[in-house]
Image (tube, rainbow, N blue to C red; front, side):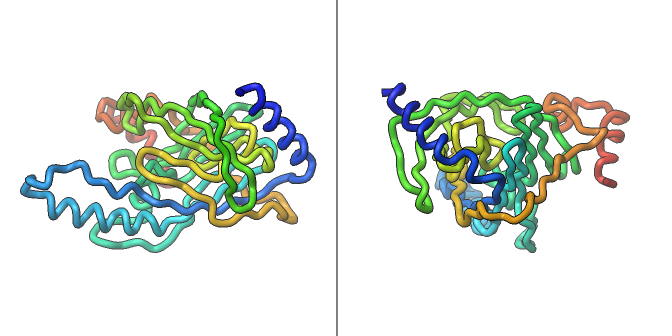
Length: 252
């Protein structure tokens, strides 16, 4: 069965290659509304009210993926959000969202821009490898035939180990570019829908007829840090001198 699926993917991909040079995709987001807190908790109502506000604002954020055959740039589209202390950066990252992410499949570069109260503005060099399992399921998304694939989610942004959590991607070999939202990719087709444990990212608009190369921010910086250094920062184990040097990125 897997061999049969592979043959179908290769056939569809071969028909798409050469027809598309680059493109841009708009994604929306629907957050998981489940609240893991006992209803008997004295703070249940306050927490529920605030999380509901947060999810409402988070679902307003849309994202853009600009891509060529070699590289891609994913970013949250800036909008004005100011609701009970909820700002744009927080709303954009709810549901495992990203503010900005750069991928280059040739050089294997992966960089992410983050802006949190604990770390300030930082650019992180990621060395992530996604292992996908392509399943015998398909569906149509915006007229494109998409196939289902899953990958394990092993470590969250704070470095905490995760078990038995899988992300689901729906990718289309008819758009033969190995990119997707949140820095996910490596499949034989563009990811049009990504389901995390916290939210679903779905396609809203597809433009494959651009008359010029779309904007791609490579997120380069001489002070880019490793993922390990970032974890040291958020855990408070980084020295004051080192932290001061890294946070000079805020002036960029």
